[in-house]
Image (cartoon, rainbow, N blue to C red; front, side, top):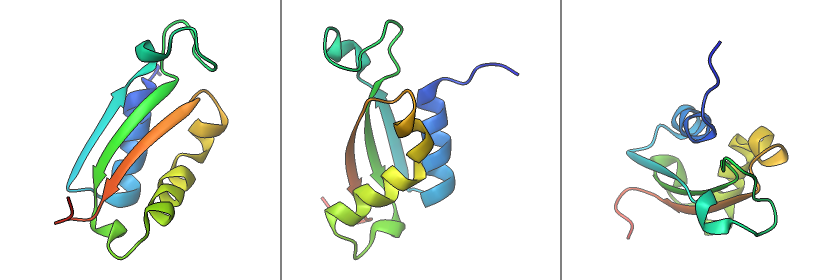
Length: 92
């Protein structure tokens, strides 16, 4: 079985959990060289932009908790940092 990039793993899990209208996962690891959690080869620091009806009526904190829960295994493992921009359709 081929190794799946962490960016793809995150995208797949968020797609499955939230069926988003739009989703963008950006590997920002290169911006954190020399910082805590950085590893050669990256895949440690990510930024997520997601729009999903699942976030309608939810607070920013609840949205972050939902995403962190969906990605619990990755956050407990190799992902050091996750920046989240989560919106419901029609926001922003």
